[in-house]
Amino acid sequence: MPRHRNYLPQGVIPAALLPFHEDLSIDAAAYCSHLRDIASVEGISAITVNAHASEVASCSFDEQRQVLELTQDEIGARVPIVNGIYADGSLEAARIAKMADAGGASALLVFPSGITTFGQRPEMAVEHFRRIADATDLPLILFQYPPSGGQGYPLATLLKIVEAVPSVRAIKDWSANPQLHERQIRALQSRTPPVVVLTTHSAWLLSSLVLGCGGLLSGSGSVIADLQARLFRAVQENDLVTARRLNDRIWPTAEVFYCEPWVDMHNRMKEALVMLGKLPRAVVRPPLMKLPQSELDRIRRALQLAGLLK
Image (cartoon, rainbow, N blue to C red; front, side, top):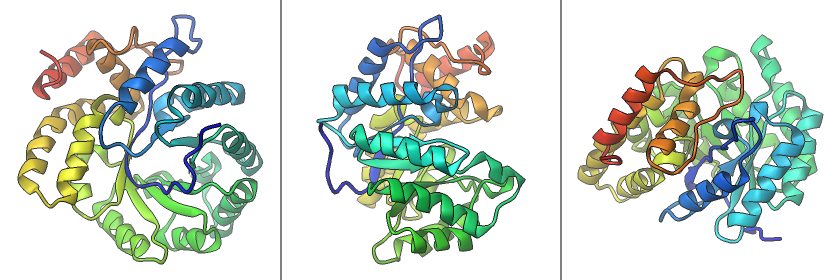
């Protein structure tokens, strides 16, 4: 089974969407076409599956395994696969990690447990990651949520996790706080070995990247992976003129994808891909619902302003 050995998470990592039929079953053909489209983009370093973008919360364990198998068969030989670990309980998280390891994933994106919305202690977070690390030797990407929701790890806890679990090699930072974001970049990427900060602040991507992130992991990469890859390259090369020009194209899409209610962000991306002729339909699983026509009109206009749609 193809696997990209010694892969370390960095660079541009789009997160794939998951198309459904009208009966809400997985549309394997549309999904594989979507994967081929993303994988063809020059400059990406991996593709993430079984994450927010693919509506993992509505997928069973068997469906998550199916998604990984489809991904492996379609693009596994071409690019590394990052598989999400979305579970409230540590035992289930470890079970998913074993499945993903056996299925050929090259790294794992570990979501925080939902129970931490009621509060957390540092030892709980460390134990959660230890359980997963005991199930696999794959590199782990810690998903850092905004502190305001209760699921974000305080910086002191974050440092305890990476100290206790060396297989945590990166974080996907959604702290939503520029000062904390920079503090984490400085604290983590100065370590030996460094823990790479992958930004997912797609609503202010240029501002985030110039702080020194080692990459980005974004659901909007399902639509604008090429623009993101070119922006990341421009920032790495200190070409601010090119970076600002690319950011001007990305901005309209960020404005319509990342707005209230945020729960619809990937719903909007599906609609965008339908408008671009890259998905046959924009079906989402409940409790997500079809977007109103007014919002579809805004998405179409944003794609036009970005130069993606005539």
